[in-house]
Image 1 (cartoon, one colour):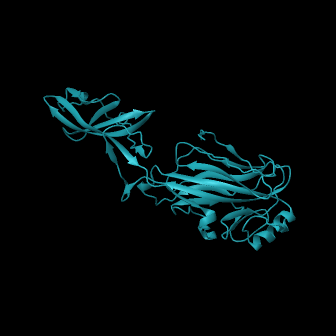
Image 2: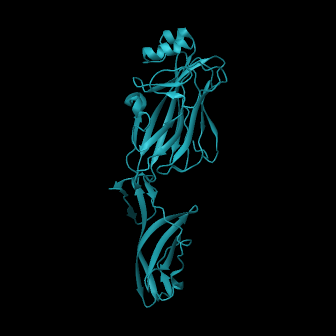
Image 3: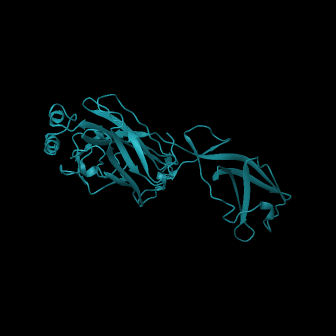
Length: 324
């Protein structure tokens, strides 16, 4: 899906239908210009649309040290009470770096390869750059060799020195080009023009049901400890507590210790995501994706005792039975 993230609030539906347990996934994409949601389901006994993920996710860029609101809860549209548990899958893709600086590749033409991301440039005109032929004292009377679609601007620096910048504008954004310049008899000749790109690195993924992080490690991404996850006060990662989310490292799931009535919504579980203030330039233009997966179970003692949620511990089982 490609949805406009300018919507301040969104309800993202996940269909849960099952005979015993149904697994559904909703995908949230962060630190990019678009938001992606994929709804997947298997057939079963609970009616379509029984459970939805509800999120409040403002359109804000992620900056080091600043938390971005990302509120996630679960809404029941079922006509019968249900029990729910939730887990995360993650995907992270960063740009290829040389040390703590993103590596730039210079190409002879614009790239159509999805692995290439154009290097951003500033708005030089707003930064005081202008037509090179208007720069007093430079001796530039004309410019040759600038192809259509590219712009060359210049700026006086110190004394009779000046700086030139060549770039292109696409969809209101500015991107970097490089070139060689030669001034002879008042004519500034531009040659060897290149297009500057960053290159996407390998995408890494992890499922919490496989990684099964310890409770103390749930406050950060399992792919990168600079990405911090913030939870609500309704999460008790240490032990099961009625009407709160409990984390179980044996399965990698959060369980809501309560019976979710028709039309009711769980307390929020995830509230913010934050890029640690120590994150360096290699985190620019990264793609971080969090998949929120839910399982639902009919809220009866028989359902819990006769199989229940796969792999759940005796402590979680006892806590769920206690609220039925």
